[in-house]
Image (cartoon, rainbow, N blue to C red; front, side, top):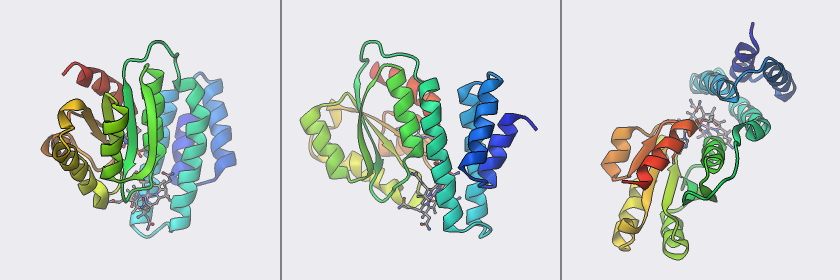
Length: 211
Ligand code: B1M
């Protein structure tokens, strides 16, 4: 089995940090691209998530898969950062209210900052009022909303509504993404851009700047 397959299986089977780390080292030693490592993690997490959904795994396994993903994200970070350069624009990013998932958001932040964006990370469980306040006071060029839970998707719509109500909508671009978010949903709520993953987030953020 290749190190990439090993990484995917380590996440699918939630086999612990030590095993995952040794597969990660093996993958690096073979010169595997960090983006491929990320994709193997994502595939493994999909399986772990499905097993949780089907009752085969408990919350403890979901928690452990999250800890493993966090560890791998931290180990991957130096390989994903390609340089600083001039700031393209300021982006305030957060996971919307009701949602505590932050691994994907953090990867999106890493890729955006690596591409030259200045990132203001608002964290998780961010209420619409907070997004509005940040737009008003700090005037970022863009806000980026992440959401992993279907029950929290409505918060994205609330953010858009509150931006419009406060007269700030035209002053800021809005990006939306996360596992249950689709381009249709993003368009329906009036976001300027949608990205399916952290890599796409960079190209979408860049193209949204010129919209
Ligand atoms: Co949660 N969880 N979780 N979880 N969890 C999911 C999301 C779930 C799909 C699992 C499942 O049942 N199959 C399910 C949601 C189902 C649904 O809503 N329909 C679920 C559930 C139910 C829950 C709880 C409710 C469980 C419970 O308590 N009973 C609970 C909710 C807590 C809360 O938020 N209020 C919960 C908790 C947790 C943990 C804390 C244990 C942990 C999170 C740890 C953390 O984030 N610090 C966790 C984990 C690890 C998962 C899974 C297994 C993995 C998520 C992850 O990190 N993926 C997940 C199943 C899955 O997604 N496979 C699951 C890796 C990450 C790199 O991918 O986050 O998708 P992702 O990000 C991608 C893209 O989505 C995109 O780019 C990223 C990188 O490529 N992206 C953007 C993300 N944000 C973007 C923003 C953009 C653009 C792209 O622009 C702005």
